[in-house]
Image 1: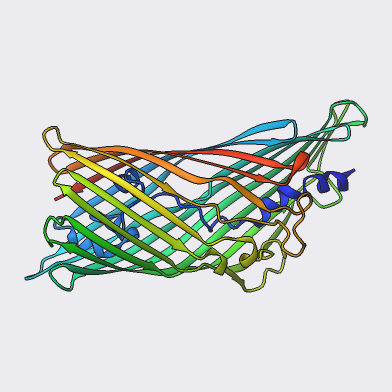
Image 2: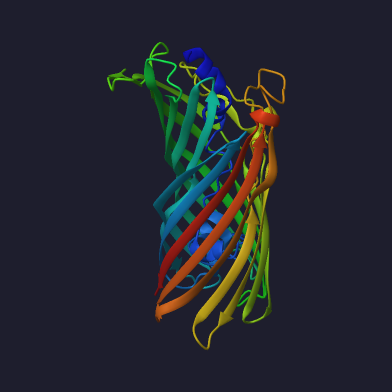
Length: 438
């Protein structure tokens, strides 16, 4: 019976084990920037330029302290045959903390900056219900964590209209994953009424170095109407150490008998490590002010996720089984945004949109041929896309507050006919930012 349960859950188990959370889970950086849909490579005129385009730091003429928080919520409605279920994951995260210091120079601009940004969001959940003979199955999968980047950056004007910037980054983070497989004997066929298997993965993404080189063209130099930006970020090579906790293959975590007796099996811990090398990313963007109160911005971010690769030995063999060239698509994020300033009341209104394509396309087992039932591809019915809106206002002369709401959705299907797993997910993020310029 245990073998039958595991085979019935093979598809979802492989999904949780194989998808690399460090690939394609953009968290959204900056309150003002995300209100404008993340179209910031061609704007980049606050601390978050260290992430989007460090060359934009050269525009800043005052010292700045920047802080932001994010409240995020993920909801995933799944359907398998006649069964449906909903999973929720909600957390409040520290998002950004940084300092910008314009260095006094006789001509042009030299600006230094340092800080931390949370750049990847691993929060995700899935609950799947179904049946196997007389058993009702309820399986739950959950990820919580993310990647943060500590940055030291500098920008300089190399001509009246061109600035260059460089950011040195240290990337690190964690991912805490749990899988729970519950089988209920609803028709009283067995002496046992409930079987539970629990697994836990704890991944530690150790420090990895990257660099971002940026360039910006401004016309005119002061109060520019037109800005064009380019940013290239090298890929990180993470050494990922993980622990896996699960009961032995011959036992369940919990077995509850019909008379109420409960038997438990201790988990067996397995530890190993491997290296994950991610590809470089290129950002392009521009902004334009047709009138002084109105700012229009657009941009893109391109990453060849299919070029990711493993290195090093995973002695436990639990992680390094993906074929990136076959299972992952290259992705381009598109960003557009607008800001309208109302100086008479001291309020800026913003709106935007962006796409964040799902890079994993399957199949789950890269060593086997694609099969619509046993080894299907993942079809994006609606790719991940976001609408954003926000406002900024001064609390006092030097202190600015920004609020942003981001709403994202996606829908994907895996498999065909009665075996298909359909996911309809919603991502909500509320961002609060404070900046002090002096």
